[in-house]
Length: 457
Image (cartoon, rainbow, N blue to C red; front, side, top):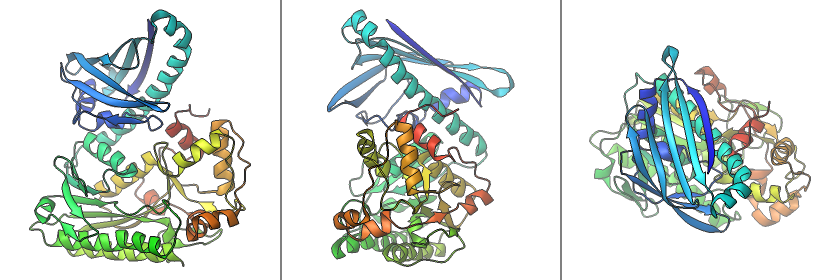
């Protein structure tokens, strides 16, 4: 039987660490983004006798993994054991031990037998341990960061929060984080699940009764910018989903008996347009082009929420780095195959942010009562050539297969010009002003974290 153990010091007492693991959203928070995992169970509990059912993609095949909680010692530990899954045997003990000065030790101990018994464990043991180290390095970092955040805002009241786009890449991560922080969260969705709210923005349909009673609304919904070639019809769909959708949401919230006091709306660094090497902050004016006009109109509709909400903020977001989706997930395979490289001349500035800093930045804005535009970007933007070179370095692959601008324009239309080749050198001045502490200010470290590689020394 193989064995693995990971220990970390966490900045809270063992009781708080245990309670965080018991919260709704904690399980999803601990799922590494490079793994493809589907949660089948409607909820996750660490109560004795409860089970969790997930589907895990291994190569081209989805496999069921069912585990049962076989031991629970409140405030001290719990243990899950595989009932069905990829291992011949698997048992995982989570321990929480008080130390001095109000901190605790998190200890994850795994005992396993690979398929084909001891022979399989002997052959595959090195690979299994390296994969477990990737997973638990990530899990412990997330736990430490989330506990720090929970402690920082422990005196703030917990909120009832509505999230549009709550099942998208960013929205699903945000919802899990908010739940694990103790907030009550629902999604505004075309396909609502239990406790969610129905809306169909294309037809102007919103269930008004479902909008009652929320303290905050985070509006992320909108047609993907990068899901196809831009033509007049595509641009119209993008505009309608963001501008008209925001108008519908704000007007509907205004009709409720008690509208939310917090309204936070997504936007983008496209607001600034193609500005070359100019360093841009929230005080800079709008640029030119479709994306700049779109973001300005989008924020304009969101600003009307100030008629009922005391806090209205706009999130001018850069490229969000997460291995589970978005730009990085699309680039990952070509780079692994040695086919990655700069777009065009590679001199255009890219404003980026790690998924964890995007979530942390939004949360700091919300909990500190801040309003107005915020650039949700890392402190140091990079040119495209540097972006791809650093990704190639993390993956140990060359990044020299330059993609000509003409080829991008042929395939993607105006999106190539505005989404891939435009230069936006954006700084997060307002995040600095509220003393937000970036977790991953270095792009190499951001790549390593979300892809499961150890941090550089």
